[in-house]
Structures are given as structure tokens and as C-alpha cells.
Image 1 (cartoon, rainbow, N blue to C red):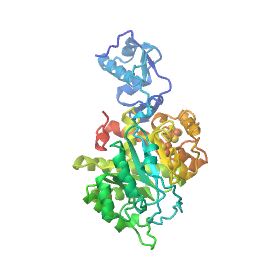
Image 2: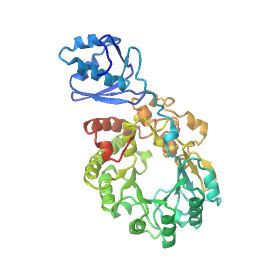
Image 3: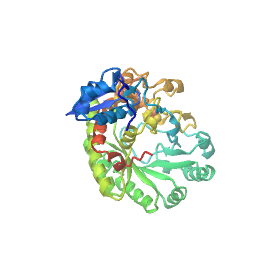
Image 4: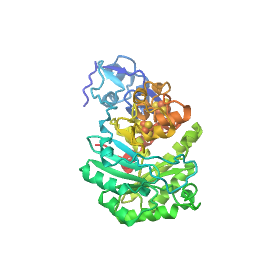
Length: 439
Ligand code: SF4
Ligand code: SF4
């Protein structure tokens, strides 16, 4: 039984955010991001809580309710940080912005040309300074970290096989190697190296042929789908870990793309909307609705299949709702650009993050460090600030011409966060079904 005496004084925290749905109430503490859904008589008990109210008076205000049930209810509010008892908050204090839990990631652009001519691509000719494994390792961290080869088509770079072998041999298990690729070309000797050095392959595959070939075009004007799919199959045959990174043009394409990936035996993907910077608020909300449908679809699939399909972003978002320990670099305040995320450009210089360089935003470390949820006018008042963290400075820059604004996808986050909270409350099995495990 919780140690709440008749004389215990109960104080409700002042800046809690509440949302009603039917007879229920979602309560969020914007400071800690702790949340809870109240239902039944407890909505009224919570709404009528007065400052400095003794527990005995709460019991007499609600004579129809069992005093022990009220005791458990107040104890639960206390543990969520929604009330103080005798002037004290629940002692558990976690620094949610302790970035040591983020796996560091270095993205490397070897200055490779590309095998595709996707419309809207701004890459053009890239000059490389010809760096190798030593310079790449020097740009990394002392702890275990990811190195992602991206930019153009890394497979077209003749230096790639040697760099991968050197990194694998010199890093002594400290790095996890990944390559972002369209898979064109993928020769047998390269496959051998990728398999031996345990390189994960992230295929730029937008979905089935009719979706992929709208954008991923070969120099002769034909679509690249068949070649990318063939390379994916070869990698799978070699037991290389594979995933997809996709851009789709419309929220309606999300489920068909997922269905296709699952039919191909893929188990992980990151799917984004093309040109998100041009989307308006209503479109971001549509994207949120499509993600909720995807969640329902994947939950059913993952619960009935032997393997789990991981849809990143959605998975990161769900994790952020059930654990105060933040691990996703892009939902951090300030974001992890420059600290746990770095980008080594083809010029051999190290920048805070590729996204910032690509959109031309400031990569000044001090300015990035000053972009916190408390320094962004809209975010500092937002109930979701310690979950969303103000989003990406590059996306803010693309939309507003400054990094000191909220993420352009703010409407998406304001829709998704409460919606996911309601859904997880109704269905506590959602995190596990989506592959989110929090110890
Ligand atoms: S970007 Fe929007 S949802 Fe996120 S913290 Fe800022 S105001 Fe809130
Ligand atoms: S700049 Fe954007 S993409 Fe890069 S780490 Fe920060 S939030 Fe993530």
C-alpha cells in the first residue's frame, strides 16, 4: 500500500497539459515528458484536486470511491511527477538530454559519381580530396560507432573496397559499416568484400516498380528498379544485412510500399516524403495519418509473423514516448549534429551533419548548440517539447531560412505525439509489436 497518510498534502503541478477524448483525459508534463491517460471517476478526481489538499479531504470529497483506490491513484500521479506530496516531487530525476546513449554516426562522402539521374538531385560534380581509412577513423569517436558511406553511388568509387578492408582491419570491431546504395553496379568481388567486412547495405529503393521508376532513372532514361532489386537479391543471398531507404511522393503510397517490402522479405526501412520542405501544415498532418495507418498495419503483421518489420522514425518516436532515455540524435535538444553526428565531406573536412551542408544552413557549432527547445519561440511553450525537441535545424532552415525556428514538420509532431499516446494507452502491446524494447 502506498505510504500516503490522511494528513499528506497533495499539490498538483501547475503547467500540466490536458486533452480530453470521450470520458478520458490525457495528461502530459511538458517538463519531464511524462504522460498518463486517466479514465472514469479519476478524471473528475484529478480535475478537482486543489492546491495543498490533505488526502483526508480528497477522500471526503469523493465518498463514493474506495480510499485505497484513491491512495493508489495519487501514488501513480506522484510517480508520474504530476503531484507533489508534502512539498516533494517523486525523487527519480533523469537527465533526458544525456547524449551518451546515442550511438554516434559518421557519414562519409567519398565524392563518388552517381549511377542515376534522379530529377531534382543537386549533387553535380564533386571534388574529392582522396582521403582514406586513417582520416576517416580520426574523424570518429573512441566508442563504438556507425560509419555510413553515402553521397553519389559509393559502389562506383574505385577506392571503396580498399577503404572498407582497411577500416574493418584497423578499427578492431569499434565501427559498424553501412553503405547507402542503389546497387548499380554490384560485382561479385565487391559483394565478397561487403560480406566479409560485415557491411550493412541500405538500398535506395522507393517501392515497387511503378513507384521506384518514377524517380530513380538511369542515364539512358529507363528506370533502375530491376537492377536495384537484382542487387538486393544478391546481397540477401550472401546473408548481408539489408534495408531500404525510400522517398515517396504521397502519404497514400506508404502502405503499398510497406506491403511490397514485406513481400520481398525485407525487415527494415526508413521511408520519408519527398521534398518535405515544400509541404504545408495540412500535408504534414496527412503524413501523420498515413503513419498511424502504417502502425496499425505493421502491428497486425508483426504480431502474426515470425519476424518483425522495423519502420524507423515511427519506431524512434514510439521509443521516445515510453522511455525518458533519449537515443535518437534528431530528437535531441540541441540535436546531436557535431556531437554524436558528423559528416565527412568529399573535401575531407568534417562538418556537424550532412543535412545542414546539403541545405546550406549554418554549420556553426556554437549556433547549433544554442538551438534548444527553450530557445525556439514556438517550442518553449509546447507541451511536446521534451519529446519532439524542436526537430531538425536543417528542416527549419529549408522552410524559414533560419535554424532558430521549429522544424517544418511541427504539425506532424503535434498530430502524432498525442495520437500515439492514446493508442499506446489503449494498446500497451504496440511498442513491442513495433520492435521497441526498453530495458
Ligand atoms: S517543433 Fe512543434 S511539436 Fe516540436 S517542440 Fe516545437 S512546437 Fe512542439
Ligand atoms: S541536423 Fe537534422 S538530421 Fe542532422 S543530426 Fe540534427 S536533427 Fe538530425
